[in-house]
Length: 113
Image (tube, rainbow, N blue to C red):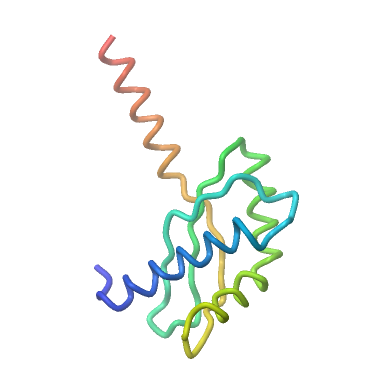
C-alpha cells in the first residue's frame, strides 16, 4: 500500500491531469477519457496514468496516441498547478477494469436468468 504522502500526490495528479485533458487538449483523436488512477514513482520522476476510454478498440488506440503526443501540455499544466520540485514524466496506459467489471456484471445477470 502506498504511503499517505504518495496517495495525496497521486490524487492531486489525477485531478490535475483529468482537468487538463478536459479543458486544455483539442486533439480530435482524444475521445471521452476518464483518468482512473495515477501511480507515481517514489522519486517523482515518472507517473503511470491509467485511463478508461469510451468506445471500441480503434477509439481506444487513437485516444492513447493522442494523449501520448500531448503529454508535454499536460506536464506543463501539472507544473503550473502544483508546487512539486520535479514534474513527473507521464506515460498513459489503458485501464481495463471498467470493461472487466461490466463483463462480470453481464455474466451474473445471465446466470440469474
